[in-house]
Image (cartoon, rainbow, N blue to C red; front, side, top):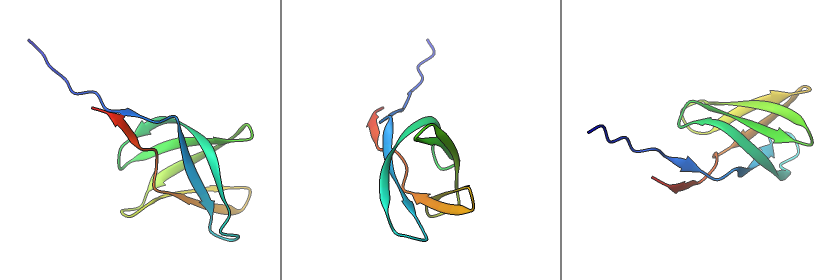
Length: 74
């Protein structure tokens, strides 16, 4: 019998602009824990990559950070 533990994440998370310190709620998809996830803000996709401390992404010359989506259940 093959038992795998699937981890489920919330589909929203907060991302913060490093320039303005403004946080917004973004939709999250394709989450790979401590690797990357896709954040969607107003139909724009921001690829967030893990840097060892937080997730970092860039769009239109702006940098964003996030702690990522919360785990819902294992």
